[in-house]
Image 1 (cartoon, rainbow, N blue to C red):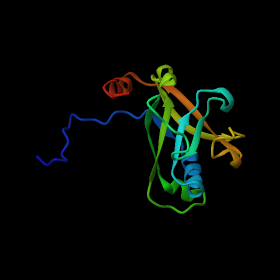
Image 2 (tube, rainbow, N blue to C red; image 1 turned 180 degrees about the vertical axis):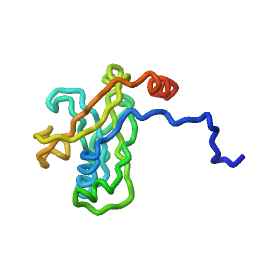
Image 3 (tube, one colour; image 1 turned 90 degrees about the horizontal axis):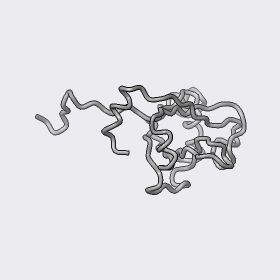
Length: 150
C-alpha cells in the first residue's frame, strides 16, 4: 500500500472555524496591504469580544492560546472584491485557552458587517468590522473533535 494511501475509516475532524464569502473577500483585499494575516478571538475589554485580525506575527501567541484552525481563503472571492485572483491562502485562528474552555462546544464563523471595529484590528479603517457568529457543535461534530488534541 502506498505511504500516502489513507484508510477509508480515517475522516478529517470537523472544522471549529469557518468564514463567510464577504469576510473572505475582505481578507483577500487586506492581505494585499498587510501581507499574511491571523485572527485572535478577543476575550472582551476594549475591543468588545471581536475576532481581531492582525498581520501574521503582530499578535504573539503562546501556550496560553489554542489554535482553533486555519481558514482557507479562496482568492476568487477577493477577485470579486477587486483584487487579483491567485492561489488560496490560509489565515490561522487563535483563542485564549481560558476562553476556549467556555467556547469549546461551539463552531465559529467569521463574518464582516458595516460599522467601526476595534482600532487594533486591520479592518478598522475600512468602515467594517469582523464579527463572530457561533452555534453549538452537533453531536457528530463534537464526537469527531473529541479525539482531537486541544
